[in-house]
Image 1 (cartoon, one colour):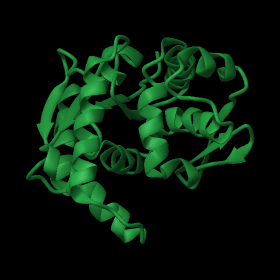
Image 2 (cartoon, rainbow, N blue to C red):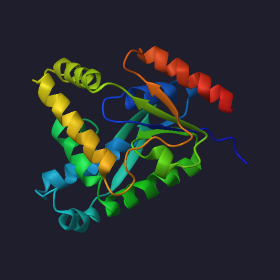
Image 3 (cartoon, helix red, strand yellow):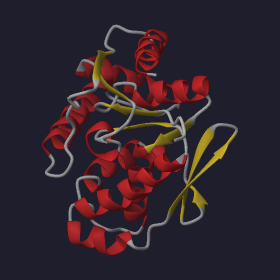
Length: 223
């Protein structure tokens, strides 16, 4: 049996999942799968085709028109939506909010999860999201749950937007994060919860290097 390293990282928005997952993928020379980008791609398709994200039936009916492909160029993940590279487009704040909505619909989750599980069968990887350790990769070798104070997470997002030259309101972002947390934790299908065998790390007062170092220690213990 192949020695496949699968790392599942879960946690709420702004906890640092993607940043940490990318660092681990680079250091271990394994594939990084940004599951959130897949849901963002679904949301982007719906938004560009004027489909109401709050009407599940309409979203599900349009889902069969959505084709997502992930390609890696120099260890950087590129997301293709119906053969268009939408890697940058899907990072808009509005698309992130839309992703939280469409990810609550079971048919959407089933389609994305099937794609993600197939990837994990093929190669060593690190995958981040909200239900990776509890639903997508239940037998992952290493499971991590990252969390951080709401205002800390809001400040991180606020600074990201300012660096991109976008206007932002810290209090509005904090409110959006609280709403998203509530929606993610209370959705009917695969809600955001810590897996029983996941290691909890509160990143509120930790640097990126601190978090990466802590996870590497956990990985070495499990290998």
